[in-house]
Picture 1 (cartoon, rainbow, N blue to C red):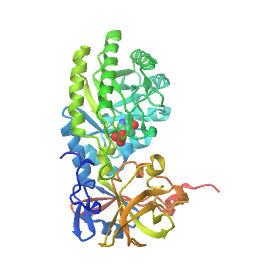
Picture 2 (picture 1 turned 90 degrees about the vertical axis):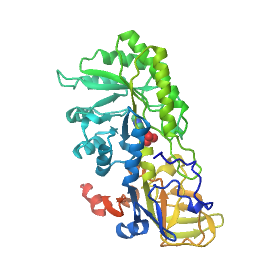
Picture 3 (picture 1 turned 120 degrees about the vertical axis):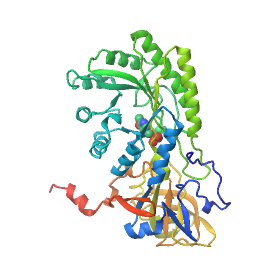
Picture 4 (picture 1 turned 180 degrees about the vertical axis):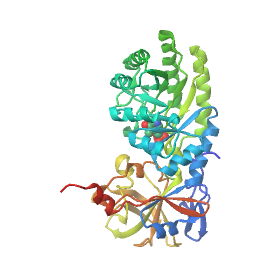
Length: 447
Ligand SMILES: *Cc1c(COP(=O)(O)O)cnc(C)c1O
């Protein structure tokens, strides 16, 4: 399987029939009714209520396998922050990937679920002393140093006689990514240590002087929703150059090169997506060339996809509660919104929702799908085409909803975070239940 890209043309001419961005298992069960993983989506909505998130287990597994196939010999870490629950931990572990975590919370969930800690890498630009202690106690494989103050802080708590493997996060000075808020490769942002001002080299020297720390490689993560190969190749050249200088100055040969994630996916038909197999081939060639030119051995490559593994495997289902026709715009209001999907409000992301659960022969109308929250900016999808007879009680499905929705969900308006239902082999099963008023009350213990 290759990862589906937005460039795939629609199966039929009508935009409403374009299922190219949906999970591979998506099928029509009867006119207007869609099934994913063999389970009709309207039945999921009936059984579990709305809003509800549906996750196609096989799609997640297939995407993990595609990465391992596309990057032979490399290490693939799933970036947990895109979406994590215990089932995800199991699937990723079973498929042979490692895990990239950014907090003690993600780390704890993974380890208590049984994920091998040696296959976990801990990131973060501001790890607390407690988080570092937790990481050491749980036996995390590698910790990515992201600031100079972290070096002494970590070295001080490594048990005597042991060594913790670390990488250094480099800010390579490369601008890439779908939005300035998710560009993390430039020098002028909070992540990593800069090569141009020498802070990366300084940190490397200090780590090499710490007997409790074992520097195994360099890391960078350029940003998210990157659709071009070229920034990654520039990163390879810069990091290999730095590896060669480290070898020259310190006699240390680093064996790992972690290029992070950020692989862009399509959210609407026609959107650009990163061609992952092409990326893999180009990185492999660039790494071989750069290392040969620099006279260093080729390090083992690590990639850390999050969005591209889980994003296309998820679907958000909402119930229409109101349709309001104003002079300029028709608003279709649903029972979820910015609390389960903050991405449109954060980055202006566009989605392609679709009517499901019943057929419609009505001509399409241009509408704006809005959420239920108390902000005018709570817009899920502006200027999208839906059947003109859309009415309260209808179900809308938003594809490509698996990444950075629920992991960024908030408690706004105390509506309760939606459940997650896995669909596979024609069977739905609840992975994460809906957050109830009781859950909310239980945390709130003061008077
Ligand atoms: C967010 C992040 C990733 C994953 O990014 P995607 O865009 O989801 O692929 C990988 N590595 C690091 C360090 C990250 O911060």
